[in-house]
Length: 458
Image (cartoon, rainbow, N blue to C red; front, side, top):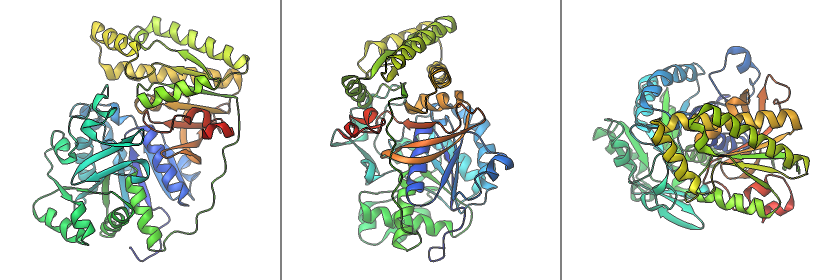
């Protein structure tokens, strides 16, 4: 397959969150391979609207779900994707491997994928150097504020409120989530030109999952060639971040399988937009502060109120009123549940959840849905055409609440966070420009850049 033209449908994917899934769309679309992401398995009529698209995906909230939820939902989803008969199906995870045995279990998802597709092994490609993600000798590293940290020492991921990373060795981390054995094709083997041999050694030792080191363009392209070569054997299933697509694209380009890439359309300037954030990342906190300094109206949304339906409804009404007033005065509203991990609102939220004896994931789902309600009402009443959602665990619930059934990437904003176009039955929502941004994605000026104004480059 490596020397033959790419098939019409080259890839299918299932994303464990919405922000990461949009990163797959971005990588593929910018490479000249139009990609559509559905919010649930599409029927024939909806799929027919995207007949010319080269990749098809389904976004989910699996990252914030239990293994039992995966047992109930993943078999049908993988069956639907298998019916699309692409050479490769990808279970997309966050590039910082957010997961735990009881929440967002990547191991459990891989088990279901292996059962559905019966691959010879499951490639695991997590690093994405273009986005500051590197894997060396099985350990994952991620950049923040210009510095690269091993994941268990990362200032954000080591303190993640839902899935803190205490182990950077991905095989060890996965070992707590699945009994499937994980092997490694390491940096030394790849640099020595022994990637294929190292893979066979790992399989001979009993590996069912094989993790690949990636640190630069050379290792990226080599890993892409190995994974695409495996797809030539028949039904193939892989796991990892959008680094997998980056690796495949690097190989396809090196093999002359992709046409020249045209420049993507620029982001049109606008001041008629809204931002909602459920992120507690310090990266997002800096972006909020920058936006406020550049004229955005920050509206605090009390996440602790989400433990009580009546209090939560009142909090949402207040946020909608404040955001509407900001729009009426010519300012861009930015509705946020927190301003970083040290915001007292984070402590209040944790205490409120514990006091009620509620599951944190259930309350997070209510918050995400509430952010979606805010967006829906503001879009309808103020006729907005652009909305920015920040927070991987909440944005999926929010965009679902909007009534969207599919998304397609339009223009790049920051690596891993493209501006997308919505597809919806509601005319007020159909064609809306949205960006789904993970908490750690983007530079300090990201929200200002979303306006399309030149100052956004600052």
